[in-house]
Amino acid sequence: MNRILDISENVNFDDSIINIEWHSHNPYSSNSLKNSDEIRIPVHQQDVYTLPSRSYLLIEGKILKTENDADDTTSELVNNAMGFLFDEIRYELCGTEIDRVKNVGITTTIKNILTSRPGDVNWMENAGWKNTTAGTLNEKTKFSFCLPLKLLLGFAEDYNHILLNVKQELVLLRASTDKNVIIQGAAALHDFKINLTKVIWKIPYVRVEDNIKLSLLKIVEKDQPISIPFRKWQLNEYPSLPASQFQTWTVKTSSITEKPRYVIVGFQTNRKDNVVKNSSHFDFCNLENVKLYLNSQYYPYDNLNGNKSLMYDLYSRFQSSYYSGCDDQPCLDKKTYLAKTPLFVIDCSKQVETLKTGSLDIRLEIQTSVEVPANTAAYCLII
Image (cartoon, rainbow, N blue to C red; front, top):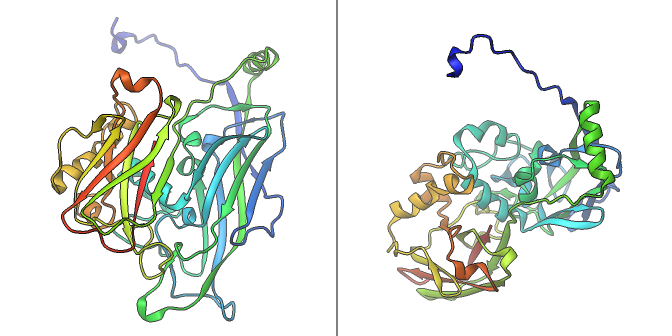
């Protein structure tokens, strides 16, 4: 019978979860928040059910002038500034590394530009993101952001289940410099420093009703293996491309368990550690074609020949493939994408049988219409 005709249908309530509470976890030392410091945030409680996929980092700090520790009101935070504060983030369970992201600022900028949607703008602003058309954040001197872990780690985005009775640690490595976190006007250059005052990991503790708790305890008692599937974000960097119109980049050799599903390529000219250039933006570099080779198989099949409309189309169709059937709602319009974040997106998630066994040699061929400018770095994000 059609559901609209079932007028006697009862209302069902899900009472399996009694309560969800966010608990604060602090680093071992509140003094280890400076450049190059390792920040370890433990969760010692092992008799609780946690939901790390919905956890977030509360980060607070100030931008100061180096010479006198006065408030710096002229420097501005770049987009995804909180990501650029850290060189590395990793998540550990019982002392075993589960997931790691290096060069956090670049990696998370590329990944989240692809997966963000127009409706995400408001909550992402609270995480240190701003609509790319605005360029910089409006925070002055003091800042406070709530940065969801799902914006930083593939594990937190993909594994949306509770964890039972395990010790957890989140490890953050502060960047050696903060020059990629802010942007200054060329006429008002001065030394500055970012003083972090608070880094807290807020984790939801889940309380369940007794029948559910009993079934979960039985899983623990049986010592039943629990898989944690997720997509890893791995960034590879070519620090300085040769001055040529054709580049061949042997990115890496990958095992079958780490074969790429998506490869995203971006370029930055003289942006790294340069306070007068926005480190969250990328450069087009007169790109003509990019070819990804997995052994002898190549993607995409056709050449783009510098066609910017085709390049934007590859970007705009990423979400429906990555999230298996959701509609595409790219956060950037074509003009903004080409001007500030021209990323070349390659979908290689559908692969021939020969690529499903053995190792993979991952290679990129890059062609530009003119020689690549000096000081141009290439980034390849493999998911």
